[in-house]
Image (cartoon, rainbow, N blue to C red):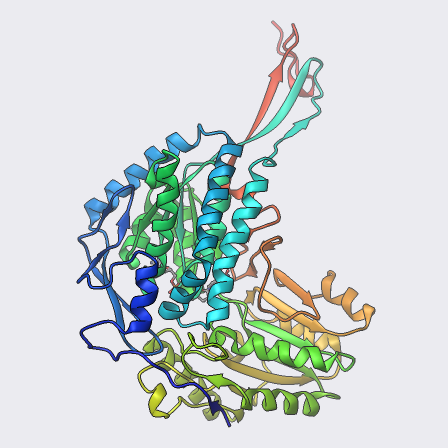
Length: 533
Ligand code: NAD
């Protein structure tokens, strides 16, 4: 039984003025509250006279703002300005670009909590997660400040006397960043910070349902750029839907497209960028499993699965969607997990203590309900959840009950196991040997995050080695969800093979040249080739 602890406050859809909770957040971020429409394009100047996007609060249904996207002409002009901004930024020394990022870091940090509240208001994740997302942007700026003095090439030994070979990184150009609704701030941060350190200008197309987060972030960055006498189009914003996304993907002025979103759209984007020989970074859907061995520490594993499955209402790319329990501990584990599910606070994600907010859209509620219906029809046992909330205080929002199900089929190729349903549904199966669980873990198309709970070092060795998990994130005694920025983040297989954030991810945001330099008085050919007359 899910307990309702917090009533949801706010104004209902169709109301004329904004609720005080929304007005307070927007005005703290310099977003006009009473305006009929907001401009959704920035390239040094704010504009926008194209399609209207509505920002709707997922908890209350309140329309927060109407935002005007770009017309084709405005889009074309913004891309032109971005190119000019790149030509300028590439001449600024890298450590100076690092200093710019340090100032942006400070400006974001100053507004961290209210930006986090805006993420909560517009996207629907709970406040601590909203703030955590902004903190990720701050963290990656810190990382990129250091990186700006360490984006090193290499000196390579030449086989020819009096020659040396250098591998040199240079800025790549304008980077297109297309982002998903569920991380409306951090994903741009991961790309922007590395890309600016590398000397590139950026064009950001956010999800059409989170325009306010992108406007607030762009305003903060724009102020710092202006203070430093740099063109605003270093961080161009073009809000919009599919058409704007397609125009960016097809633009030959954008050598690198970093796309975060669903596998279905990623497949189209990847092909389109490849067809013009552009570079892409694809960060697509996940279908992540946790495996619990009999020697796992239950005190740690149960809450980790709880957070992994319910955090962000199951709308993280790294959310735990599959749970494989060793038969010996399955009853005890499920009992403890269901007890936690029964205590969850559901309600207004802006209220401290709420752990479950709404799904982002009404459409997502439909996707959740369809998935639960499919489970029921196929004979799955629904241990908890499986419904929307009928409590009056939640009726204007997109609230659904977190669900644990035991499907009848164990076939990993079945749609129940093989597709990512972006909602808090956790499917459970039992295994006897670790090898079986690893096989199931790897049998799905996606390969983002995975997690093994054990204290046995032999299991650990198998899990992280060649016979282990084939995902991009392979955790041990850590849940599937919640990565730090220091390591490269991303997934394999149909998750797209992209890497962002830490590790060697920065190397994708530069163009590499091999430069052979002859400082001798002879000009020998490589491999001893003799071409003398
Ligand atoms: P989505 O694919 O619907 O949209 C992503 C972006 O693509 C949006 O900005 C959208 O407007 C744009 N778009 C849509 N059609 C386009 C087209 N034809 N050409 C170019 N752009 C187009 O995804 P979503 O629903 O916003 O986000 C949820 C998905 O994102 C989930 O699958 C989730 O797993 C994934 N995701 C992955 C990661 C990761 O790092 N792997 C991180 C966050 C989210």
